[in-house]
Every structure is written in C-alpha cells, then in structure tokens.
Image 1 (tube, rainbow, N blue to C red):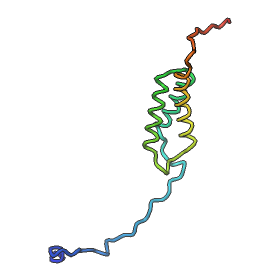
Image 2 (image 1 turned 120 degrees about the vertical axis):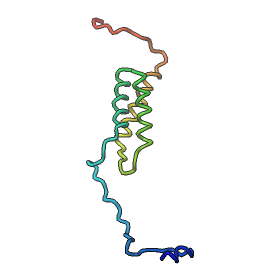
Image 3 (image 1 turned 135 degrees about the vertical axis):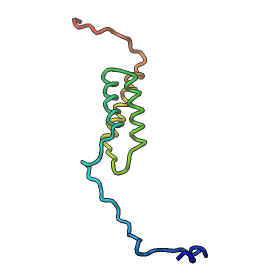
Length: 109
C-alpha cells in the first residue's frame, strides 16, 4: 500500500466506507426556543404599549438577529410574523405621529 501511495495511486479501504444515514427529523416540540425572537416579541410589545423608543429599536434588532440565524427546520411563520409586526408597529407608533402633543394624564377629566 505504501508503494502505491508514492506512485500517485489512491489507497482505499472498502471495509471502512459507511453509507450516509441522514439524521432523524426533529419533532416540533423538541426544537429549542428562539431567544432573539422572544426578545423581539416582548420588547416590541413593550415599545408599542408604553411608547418606548428604545424598546422598539431593540425589537427591530432582535427580530433581524432572529431572522439571520433561523434554520429551515425551525421556521415558524406565526412567531416571525408576530415579532416583526410588533417591532414595526412600535416604531410606527413612536415616530409616525407627527402632530401629537404631549399631554399629562388627568384622572378626573
């Protein structure tokens, strides 16, 4: 075998060749949670309801991070849609109202 390798021939050992066996499919309940998507959803909701600009921007960046690292097997359209909707609507509520005025909350009218 060593002489064949020196002359440029290939040495193969058919006893070590194993056929490829694809990994078993992962069940939907066994997929680890996508933490950037969860952060995006929660901070987007926080930014939308409390009109917090920092939380809305954090939701946008966390949503982008979640989309960048998603795998085809972990693709959940409902979660991505909800997270991106809250992130975009939070920014729209914070920056989209041009003529709004800051008012104090008056409990008695």
